[in-house]
Image (cartoon, rainbow, N blue to C red; front, top):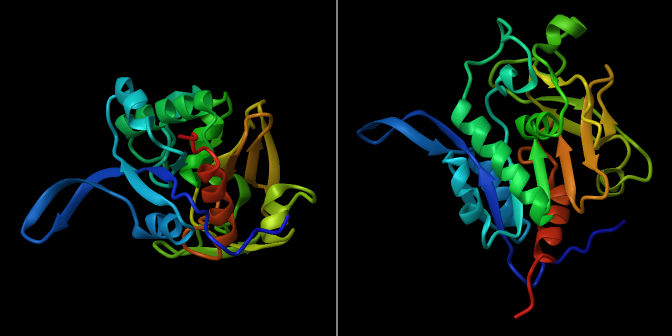
Length: 245
């Protein structure tokens, strides 16, 4: 598959989940809804209109999804292990129950509507948990290396092997080098998902949801390094959700 270089004629609205964290700006210091600008920038550069979806009540998901043409579940803190029936490990972040509940509800709603979904890093993990899988809570304990998060606060680089014939391999090649920053990953793969990419140590790095339209999850961070083709494909798929007038 070769993607056209031009942006879609129709500008789709892409919902981006985001953090709610303590922050400081100007003279203010308090909770803020935020997301690294690289996510919105990647969507905008690909021809989409990014809209932040801060954590809210799951009951408002229907209203939040109305008018959207695609959904991006972004990276961030660890998913609460209670969501997949495990006790919290010593290296696992404190639970962000508001964000977990919000993103799981957003994802469920998007799948029902068959919206294109791009799930990045934590987003991939949310997708796997939502569909019945679970996670490795601290990869260095299992692998004995820091391949996936070599330096605190800096995205590492490593190759990923993508399955031949998949959409990701067509867009990125079968052996792309990706930006990595995570200490958790898929352990038991949810039955509806198909693994389509792996790190050199065997960690699942990419998945697709079969028979569900455009639903792709990647463990790496395409918004910070060499992700133009993936975002172009995502935004184009979202543009195709336009309902004729």
